[in-house]
Image (cartoon, rainbow, N blue to C red; front, top):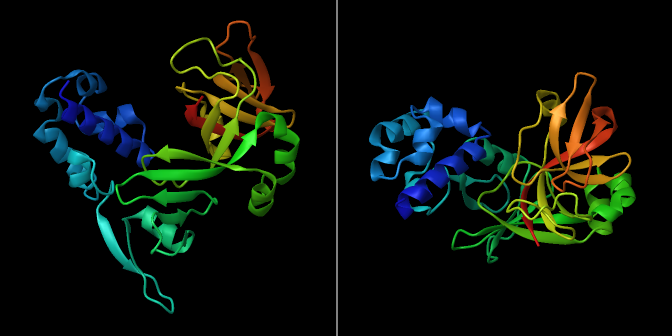
Length: 273
C-alpha cells in the first residue's frame, strides 16, 4: 500500500478514537465499508466522496494534519485567557479547548517543551516537532494495598508512587495511569501478549460503561479489585453481574468475578518491555 495513503488511513482511525467513536461504524457512516477502507491499495482508497463526507460531518478536522500529519488533529483556535497577563494559546477547537481552559493548568509557555496538565492530573509534554509525551503515576501490581488506600487522592498518589512517561499521539481527556505487571498470565509469545515486568499505560473505563460489555482489545484490561490488581482479557459479562476474566497463557484458568467488587478498570493502550 502507498505509504502516504496508509498514514492517512491511520490518522482517520486515530481521529475516530479521538472523537470516542466505534471505528467500524465511523467508516461506514462516511460511506465506505471497513473492508474496503482497509483493503484498497490505490490512491482512490481514500476517495474524494469519502473525504467530502468526512469534512462535511467533521468540519473541525485539520486537513493539513490528515494529509501530512503536521499540526493538530482539529483546526487551531487562538484563545486569550482572562488573567493579569494575557496569554495566547493555540489549542484544538471544540470540547478539548473548553476542558483545557476550564479544568487544565497551563504552565510557563517559555518552556521547551510546552507542558499541559489535564483535569485528571496527567501531565503532557508537547514538543516543537509535534511529539507528545504523557507522564503518569506508576502502580506496581504488588502495591495494590497502597494504591487502594489513596487512589482518589491525587496528592497522596504522587507522594506514594513514582512516575513514568509514554509517547502518545494526542492529548487525551481521560484518566491515565501506568502499571508494572507481575506474572505470565498474559504471555503466550504472541505479538500483543505481555510478559511479567512490562510497563503499561491504561485509560480508565468509566463505570457507566461497564454494563454495556467489554470488547476484545489488543493488550487487555487492568482490573483493580478489592482483592488485587490483575491484567486480563474480559471475555464475558454475565446476567448475574459477574465478568469472566481470561488469560492468554493457556496454563491460567479463566474465572468469574463480581463487578460490584471491582473498583476500577483500565483499557491497556500501550505497553513496553
